[in-house]
Length: 190
Image 1 (cartoon, rainbow, N blue to C red):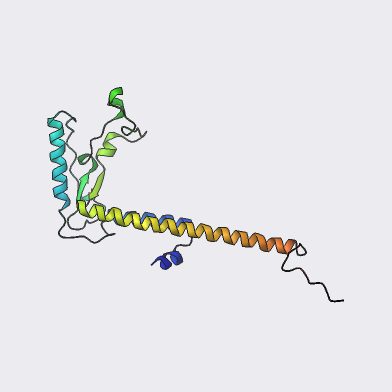
Image 2: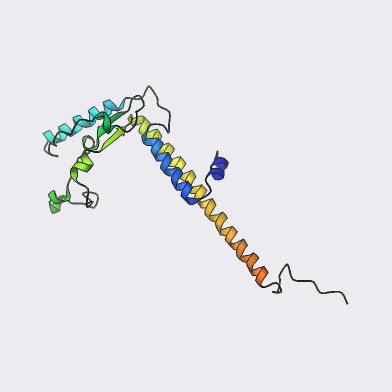
């Protein structure tokens, strides 16, 4: 398999495109096989909703506005069995930087991204797979990304070797009588 990749992907750009294709297959549910024994993503979403409701009840997070329903037009592709479409806001508790007290700020939270509204983030439609499948996807993405990086490194080494060889050949052409030159004519026998 590795040899096929190195034959097909011979430029850094093509390897970067391969990485993007791997990620696209992952989010579409086409990178790893589905296991019908996995708990469906709908159950995971129910647990997340219950956890968020408990955090609201405990006063740890604020109750969020209801998210808009997901229309058929919002779904860019058909999901495998066990997967669900959801709004990102159903999964996260978004804290806006402007609402944080200095005591609540940490380096791990509230990174501001100019030009992206709260609604843009919370209303984003994403595909959720069963939790066990998420683990399989991450493992496979990591394996394939590592392979892509190895191929890219090999490609860079090959390009460096070619450049050194080309430099040596040019040097031989420009300096044919240089000492230790393999193309230097041998002295004739007297």
